[in-house]
Length: 140
Ligand SMILES: [Fe+2]
Ligand SMILES: [Fe+2]
Image (tube, rainbow, N blue to C red):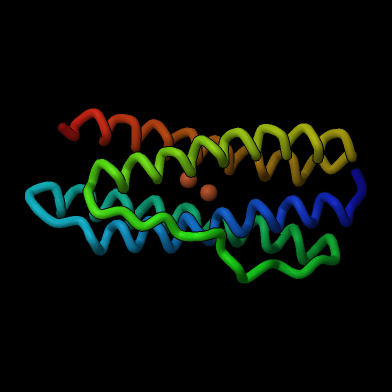
């Protein structure tokens, strides 16, 4: 592992954050029915968290001498609320797994500040995943 490799991995993470921002907004726009007021706002709020994560990662990438990506990973389209929440939960679980690995990789390099920043992001992703799990339970 070297700085270049870590920058590449952080850019991979950033692409996931950019995907989450757009995907959650898109899902929030599409939600209809009696659940709309509540679910729309939850998704919009989570999207804003992802925006903060993207900014944290981008600032780290620039400080380390890299260029932050502007390409999101593919957005997952969904028609029903259940499909949306299932896709969103899957994304959060992937982020949890990737960030757990990233923390170890950054620590190994002595990049403790980077590791701590990612730890904070991981805590948010855990909250997001828990929220999606509970919202999914309400869906029949
Ligand atoms: Fe995030
Ligand atoms: Fe998240």
